[in-house]
Length: 473
Image 1 (cartoon, rainbow, N blue to C red):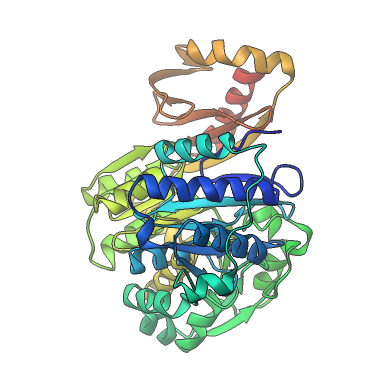
Image 2: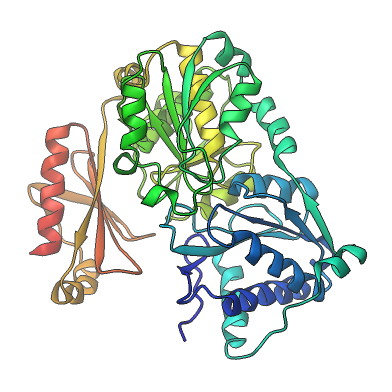
């Protein structure tokens, strides 16, 4: 029997192999025991789920187990975005949230994401404790818990719809008047996920002309991973490209915590560039000020924006929980990851793809320019930066050489001298011309993720070649 293991954003596993009702009961019981140990059980838990198979069933079983442990559940009545669950957790000042989601993973995965009272993803110290408790329960037959009828009678179960309160918050943070006044026609793509009825609905409520695609419930996500990346959104790109009246395409992933942005001509805009553009927008147009936080794998275009505005950048390991801590502590204006995660000061310490999309719509409306025009303008002020990521698949022999290779970094990569090595998450080599390479080994497959960044596409192409050779030689 495989061990339950929490990754960068919860425990995820394949249906019927490791993601079973028995293992779910073990994890939920471990969370309940952990809440009792911390003295937080009387504050209740928000329970939510995304659009995957049996999400509501697993969630109801969770409510029964929590009720048997004397912990009240606030049960979301429909599939609910991860940032909305985080928002509701904070609004109610609950002890935590249990969210059944595998985010952008394919349909045959599910997962449990636990958020503590702070509202962000649980930090390793907490997930390690939950892991230990859950794995200790393996092989034991746990009871199904209290019936929901009995739980409701005892005040331990309440059904909720958190959308309206979440919308109240968004309407305070976004200039919807500017979006409506710009007469934008916006295409929205929730990728069959739980973002349905969120991004499209709030825009429509504010008088924006909205076109929708992939907006019905489909646990198979149309046969593709519900990830708003370029390779999985060809139909969306074609829609925007084929309709001259569409100003912008906005997509969210399976649990609506990540974003995907399409410019008016159908060009997919990389998340790294969106993060930098929004950072600049918040300071230059919204009149806000503060530092930024980004993961070690995220573009230094954010650093260039920070330098231009006289603020700082904090670098974190990969995993939004580290950025979430800075948001919770009110230390940054914006936090983001290259994998399309973003949040801002005064909001949830969790990725919010809905908020990110709305900020992009606001920026385009206020600036009255396309995203590519905005990026060109940003380059004219802070300098040109290009970034790319590839996966390098490893043979068993190559995989065996990696630990020694990474433990003894070279002095040069090709013609470039390495000026600094950063090892907070993988091996990041800062080079003498301001470019950089990052190598991160996957924890689940024989793959090295190579990230590279340079001031021109020509140098970037060369860096990718040098990085690949460094791994494969």
